Length: 363
Ligand code: IPM
Ligand code: MN
Image (cartoon, rainbow, N blue to C red; front, side, top):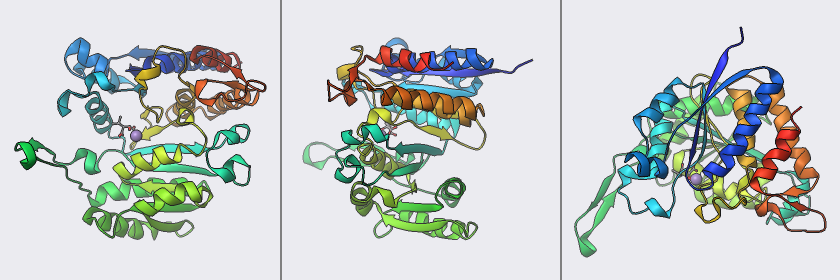
C-alpha cells in the first residue's frame, strides 16, 4: 500500500490565506495525478491564532506540525499585532516553529525567468546581459534571532534594550557542510557572508567555514563582508552561486536578492534539518494591504510546493512538472498584479486564476 504523507498547512495572516489556497490546489492535483496519498491538516499560526486562542503558536498547531512529514506555511504578522509584547507577536510563532523543527538550513533560490527579465530594476539583467542563478543558504535556528534578549528597561532617555548573537562550532559546521554539498551539485562555489572585521561570532563563523572547507577540495570558497555583499549582490549577482549566511544577514540579503528576478512574489524557500522533514514557505511577508483582493502572487508558494515535492517527498519529476507549469504560464504572458506592466503583451490574472492556470497544466 502507498504511504500517506501528512502535510500540515499553516496559512497564517494577510495574503497567507490567499496564496496557501493556491498551493493546496497544486498539491492536491499532483497527488491525484501521481497516485500519492496526501493528508492535509490545517492549523492556526500567527496573529489569527493569537486572536482566536490567545497565543500565536497554539499547542494544537505544534501537535499537527510534529505529526506531519512537511509543513507548508503562508505568512505571519501585520500592523494589527505590532503593539503586542515580543512573546505574543505573530513572528515569535514562526521562530518557535523553525526552532522546534530544528530546520537550520533555509534555502532561498533566486532564478531569473528570461521573459520577466524586463521586470528587473537591475540594468544588465533587464537587458539580458546576465542571468544570475544563486541560492541563499541562510542559517535559520540560531544567531541573533535566538539570543538572550533583554526587553526595554529604564525610562525616557535612559531606556535600553539588548540582543545577543551567539554561534557555536556545531551550528556553523552543520550548515557549512550542507552549503558545500549543495555547491558540489551546482557551479562549485560557496561565498560565506559575515562581519568578521567587527563581530566575534563572525570571527568564529569564518574560522569554522575555512576549516570545514578543507573537506571539500573541489568547491571554491570566498568570504565577503555583509555590507560589501549587499552592494555586490545587486551590482554583480552573477558572481554568486551558494551564499552561506548567518541568520540575520541571510534575512537581509534575501530581500536584496529578491529584486533581481523583479518580484519577491517569485521567491520560494525550503527549510531543512537532518532528515527529510521540511518547512516550506514563500520568502515574502503577509502584505496585509493587498490581502483578500486577488492581487497576491501565489507563485512563490507554488514553487515552494515544488521544493516540498522534491525535498521531502522525493518526487523530483512532479516538482519539475510544477516548475514547468509556472514557466509556461508566465511565458504565455499571464501576470499577477506585481508582475503586470504591459497590457498589449500580458494578461492580468487574480491570485486564484493564477493558481487555476498552474493546476490545469498538471496533467
Ligand atoms: C523571513 C521573515 C521572517 C524572518 C520574519 C517574519 C520573522 O522576514 O522569513 O524572511 O525574519 O526570518
Ligand atoms: Mn525576511
